[in-house]
Length: 584
Image (cartoon, rainbow, N blue to C red; front, side, top):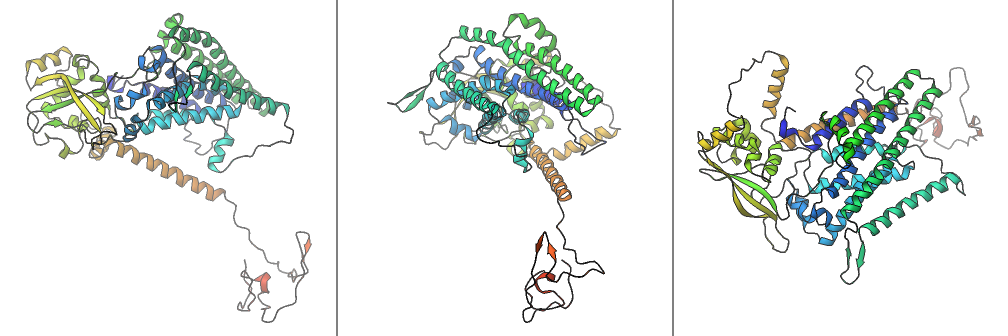
């Protein structure tokens, strides 16, 4: 609410909801650090993370079709997506050059992973859940490689980790517990489990071919695809599966609650049973309330219930309902009187500059510039204030445009006039053989030429209530404001991605050192060879060891009696160079 439009992205709400669930799933134990004992109701609270992941992915896939966007229905969305997204990566240029048939098949795969596969999140078979996990990770990794969507994809992968179990994670950490493979022939349960798993894969393949018209064209040697159902049929299917999906979620939740209560009773943990009850009530309330909040836009009967929970501000719909434009991307270039065009750090501007890699950092100003280009400047009141601050030469605003002063053309003195032009951008083609990444064409003027005190600019600022106001600032007498100001001054010369990756490396290094320290403490010390106690005869070859009698061979010539030859000496050479007994 404080950041308003700059912090009103859907992944910000996702981070808020995931952060709230993290309080229940992984509470910070300050007083008992390292006491990470498993509790029976952990599985119930952890189920909420899986439910959040299901709502996110299923709604993201459904909303693409309910939006009636012709590019999603025509399976051509990815032919525009890579160049029309806000901040593409260099890999997006190469992905844009792929054949259209491959782009269409990629859209089909996206539908399958986002709509069909999330049902397997609650499958009772472990291998089906692992298949769903790796499907989601594959999709998110491909998005990370081709687009800068800040922390969203990494957060989704973290949520997808709720599909794993201790055995599978143990294989990554080297602490796996081997399952009992069983004997041949397999048991009836194992046979039915394998049969159900193969049937699930077969149905996924059959429905994909049936509903998306997958067919191999042998003459052209390509895979053809098309949507083989109508919008009305999809709406009817959606209403038919809504209630069964809710029932499936409640069955999965009930199983987790009953299993946790059984473990509490068998373990005699009465407080743990209270935790199971509280977690079950919270999970049931979250399941019913939030599910209908998602389906509210799909079913008119749930609109009233959806309106009750939307006021919380932590619940959003699906992502990517439609592509940006039918051809090319819209963007602005700000011009000032004097040196020329104002270059932003991340968004496309200079056609010869390669797209950057900034994830998990999100340049909020660059993203808002992308959204503002989709409409008139009056629909983005902040842009008038942005132009006003550039004319004033406000340092904090300029650093949002360029951290390096040498890259900002008006670092010496603020511009006298500023105007904004609207351009359409396209990726260059590999057939062109150009050294540029982009090509662009001017469309129209986005913001008129203004200066400080210009009546047009003053009217816009007054209209939106953005006129300068003198605010009384309290002196920095407390510790927290001083610390924050010092940190801000320290980080000011560095770009956002550098700061974030530095923090991540520090955390990763701390976790690595902690793991090495724990491994060193928990490792078994090397076995030591204990010599005979005082008063006991030494073993001269006839003693019994591990149930076997060792025979003492006759001493070779030159073997040291004090050392004991190959038995008393660690090197076993028996060369007589050791004058006294040595402990191993």
